[in-house]
Image (cartoon, rainbow, N blue to C red):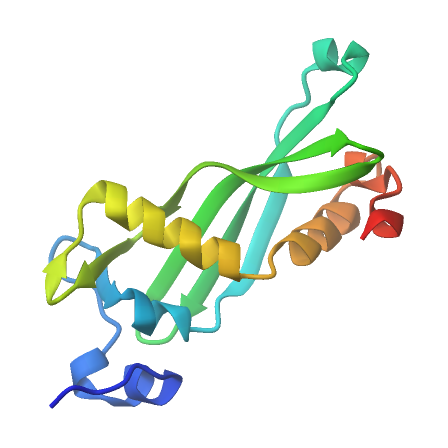
Length: 153
């Protein structure tokens, strides 16, 4: 019987139990992952390169980590950078996410490349930028996010 992935089936069904395998990875389909309520854990800034201060387009970067915890913890983290251009800040994922997930399709593990693509798709569908910005503003008194970011949203 084919069950539709939903928060209820993932959390209540023995078929969708969220527990790590022997290799420490948690195996889910993208559909199962997409209904989980990932919570923000932490965001921080990377060291800012002073040589960039003279550039017309400045880049500030950092990291963010998100978590779903039930029987075990699912973590998804990624690097990001803020780009000041066209009179406003734009936030973008930088590189590939880090996670303890191994996503599956048709009952089989996807390739590392496909796993990264699916995690990036998940991040693209999340409204993570405002939460990350707020965390940076709260954590750092002197922050590049103070540069009229809130007015540009």
